[in-house]
Length: 266
Image (tube, rainbow, N blue to C red; front, side, top):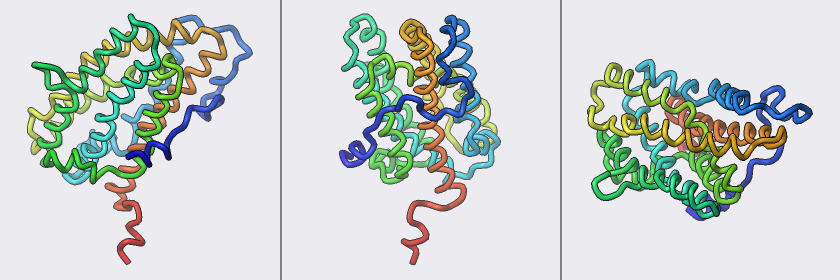
């Protein structure tokens, strides 16, 4: 695991390529809180709900192997979220922020009487026909997914804590994706046990609560034109992480081009 971590150590560079006209234009007045919020929300058009893999999923066009591939690879992201949040907390000197942010760790790792998000994801794995050991062994995690997730965790370790907070703002768009799974999966994938969808149900409320806090911090901290442009760069980086994970899954499970398939089959 250490090798992957070291290979992926990186920060989001200034002027990170975003493709958004005007994102790096700092020769302007700072946006108001309302304008800045609108700019952040507008980036939802690049959220991974629009990736071809998710489009196929929501239309009921994935087979069991493809659903299981997504669950197995996404598990690697799930188990790394607490590490990301712990890294953020270790860099944050503000006690009030730490107290509120700590709930995210509890949400994922669980506490007495609350199984937590990681356990809920393991139950999702069982609901789609996978064993816990198949998930926890990480044997099905693709290299591209590892690189993307590790880059995100290492960013949170090395960046100022306010930037790590900003990177979580993809949660602005998360309730939509959870609702779509809850609506489409029972219809398109009746073979998936309903109890396994509890993770998505719980995240509907948690994501709304979490993003309010993250947005509050971002609006308070990123106040100059330069800082606001930086915030958009960071959010684009996180969107890239999520999109790149699905790129790797699409190639492996939809196009059937797993890493090294053409050479290992010789």
